[in-house]
Image (tube, rainbow, N blue to C red):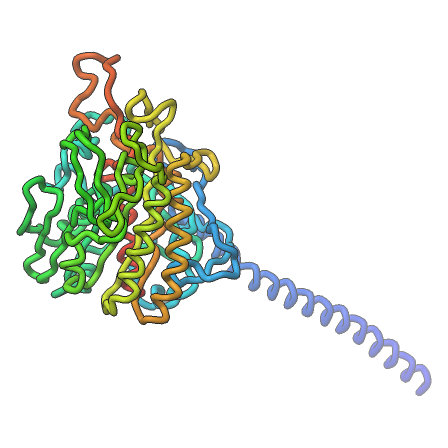
Length: 459
């Protein structure tokens, strides 16, 4: 009897044990399923949040256009001429960061090449128009002059290793309180200074306090900040006698002194806190070269019995003299050297029917520099590299403002025939000389201001 009871108890216990084991397995399974669901649930929430963020849209198409990129001409393990390291990274097409916070800027400093990046769609467009800025000259006022397309206004430059906010007028003016900035060079420098003033005038209207007889050198004041902005006309950076009228018609060769810098800027050099120099295009003009007040030769002077030296010889000579002056100056401010801007004539030159009819940026390699631009840029990069080492040793804050590659991708940003007011109003087939060198305002040149502020802020 006991045996039977013991057997029944064992059988019952084993049955119960099997049931508990099944319950345990079921419980563990439910817990595992719950854990998996719990892990997956935040991920699902994350996807939902991303979907709620509006995707950046293009101006005129439902399909975003491709990024238009520029890579650094330097080796990836070298320091770039502006004192920053270059590195390759996939293009970042993320949204525009308007916060412009200082911590991000400090983090970016020293590791970002601002001139390696992409042109990406920017639906926000320019911060000013021809109606909100009083300083746009007629030949730059593409909107007023009747340019029919506006797509060229809706792109922005995006460096690959850091954020590039649009210039904040209030913050920039505050950082420039009691300072003086000058752009020294040719008409592209004037083009740039007008772009900068248009942007800054969103915070305070500029007051013109000086101009020369031809309005080539000018100075403006932002009264509340005691900040002066100047453009100094010095197309060669060296002393030159120029014999041409407003339309560029010459009566004689330019007389260029390769060993004498232009007093227009050297006399003011020490009083300026921030300076941007540039030159280049004018060296292609017919000129007689002097050294020690003695004729050394010329460039394109077939009617004179002089040795052809070539514009490249003259440009290199002047830049070496210029950089020697800068590096020995003991200047305590910030000095930029801007590379020459490319022209975008196609199917001819300005005098032979050349045009610039494109309406959007091009891809890297699609538009090549002409021979003049290539030679000028090679000389600029080589001479800057040589000078930057010496400047660093001397404690001179010299930086390269290398806008040439990124500007090369913007053949859509020039006035073309709309340098003139309503050029086709009377005759749609009228033959008009095109301007494929200067930039529409507003236009791609506005990006140069964003780059300038970034470099000034990072110091």
